[in-house]
Image (cartoon, rainbow, N blue to C red):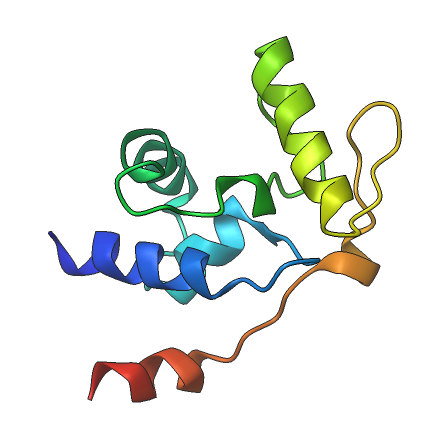
Length: 111
């Protein structure tokens, strides 16, 4: 696994229940501020294999970005089960629910 991919997996696994992060936020923390689309691909291809809490990742506006109705609904249900409130359109209050880990917490895990 490439270092960026490994870091993305580690970051996503670290998001506690009841919080979300954005694709861009994960990418930046993993070392590639412009890698949000890579985060999408990693989630798509590795969520099951690594048991990633994929539902805790949203777009920069705090919206559920999945277009497929069934998956979109599942993400909303999973978030609601963890106490994250969305409106009927799938919008989340990032000021309230955004997880903000520090870079240092991931640098220390590398050692």
